[in-house]
Image 1: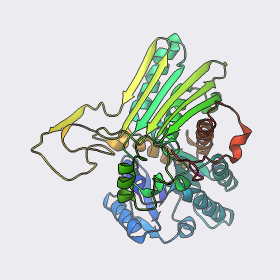
Image 2: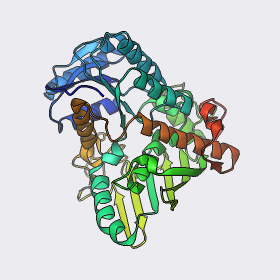
Image 3: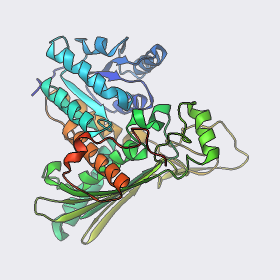
Image 4: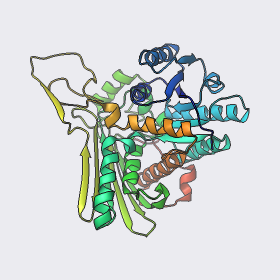
Length: 416
């Protein structure tokens, strides 16, 4: 176990993209923390993020020209791995080498979802962290959503205590498509929307179904059944539009990734009661913006949450025009009409409580509630769903074949 820290936790960010800026916003709601450093392969991007951290009062934030330089700093206590999926394992290897050589001040590492592109990479991420003696945190923001935290507490305290445990969790995440080109490339991202977003849905469902007094491992997966499809982005007009937005490397006429995925996971708890997770994700949803939906059902109760059913809305008539943006809700698709507004996206989506929890645990030298072990468990379920979708058969778990399984989407063999 790492030693407690008397001062603020000094965080180093590996990455300066969309999610890094989300974490800066979230960290405004966290005490005893400093964003002390950032690495990005693009100098202008790391300079801009460091300047923003300083402007928000989260610094002083230094810039580093390489992962090695940041990992070797004695002024960094913990690292947030926020870069593209295909860079994460190499970043972890650098942190591991620095720790084994005794040339780092880093004692903890947190990684954005998903932990890795496949199960072999995920297990290696965990092995490296454990071998280096680092505390780990898996950055799954949705389980820290204010609605999910409060909803689970009420359901288990009032519903489950009186009528029995919940048995069905449904989770869906949908929007019109990712921000950056690498997300669309199966080889770099590890797949399509199933890899990118169902990692959220599966873990929030596992969290809701887990007894608050028991570990996540008290739920044992029994089987996985998955379906994937490309419903929108292989249509000729959208192939052209995607290339115009993301560049010629993203060619969905030649190497698409799935933009729709559905999965069903059957589990049992430590009393062998059967439980079900139903998850749906898509990059082909066009509505006001990102939509998150969660439901938890039990014998005499139900819980539901929809992120677009906001208390705050505005209406803009045809006479009001303006530039496109995301100032009302993430992945915003319109600037006119009746629009929902998330007044605190970092809080509603769970980033604030997530970062607060990780900072507090790392400062105390304690294991977080969400670790690399959970990240491995999620990736195993994702690979089972991909295998099911490719074979057309339900996958019985555990499945030894998943250890070296790489989805066809990631190998460039999927055709939509």
